[in-house]
Image (cartoon, rainbow, N blue to C red):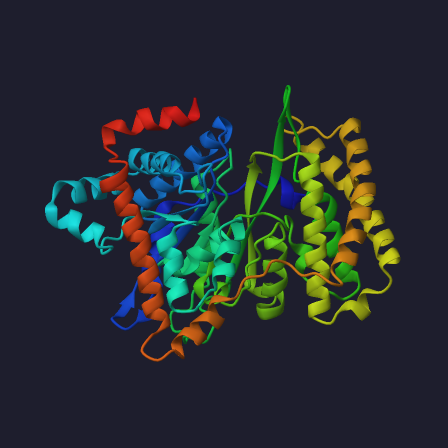
Length: 477
């Protein structure tokens, strides 16, 4: 592994550069040429934790600045929160929209416009006003009703989709307008504007404005985050990212030596949740509603498009709110099960060989990676420690992870990830319906989210700009 990949600091990207790329490239639609557009999706969930709420504040406020700068065209806050009785958590959504109003001049002006004019208010409540910030509820019954009435989803499927980050992201795909969709987690403590700009830049640079509708419209259809993940400890930071460091990187290196998923071993942070993807590519994916969502996306993109269509952008130092050891181990079992599922699905199990030998290879590879991480920490001692206690901790993790991986292998025989239908498949199905179309479905879903957002602003919570500080303070103090 190239340790410089971890140590290298990101180069600044000006907002003007992204704006020019969006204008210089274009998309052809029924009305002619138009600039490339970017949507950002931020999945959120009320954890009733002020630390998480402060991270949400950081992410949404930074996205607001990117809207004002012309980098981002819209932000969809995809919220899965609910009250103790299972209803939509309106109070938390008030908090989310208050952040957007306070930190985005564009959104503030939009809110004042629809509040100040009867015409603007009516358009908004009819779902005909596209705010730059929109909020989608994962448990919105009116959103579900659209799918049910057209027999696109069953009631059981709807119930399954009321929970899970992957389902929340899946719902957001037809709701967004962008040609590029950028997903960012809401618990990122270190969130910076260059994250979005850096993820979208390689896709924009490779954009093919003349691509046909059945062709990839960029030389890079997917861009994924890499970083040095830091965890706060007394007196400094220690190295985080245990699942990527101790499982993802070594296991993909082992698989590549067997001729499997060649190229994915070059991904320096396999399980990062921050990414940008073209609409053409995302429509072909089966989202997973489990912890394996990043793994399942990587495997499908590799198979469908190849590693050459994928890019990475280095965030530099990165912090988000970590989970506990038990949670990480639960995630690992699901991720490893999914990885073996994709190997089975693509008929690669014969090349994989004996599982016990594979586990030995993994353990050896993971142990050798510890030296790489020690070298990284030595280069940046002022920012990162990786001492003997942490080394010993990682060695114990590797031993435990080996057993969990073997368990995931066994589970993959009779189980599969919680995969959702690709939107391309739904599009074909809907277009075959008499008197209906996928464009009509998208329009209905987008209108519903517009109405939901407008109702939050105009009817239910009555957000005013001068109330934002008080609303925000209730959640972060």
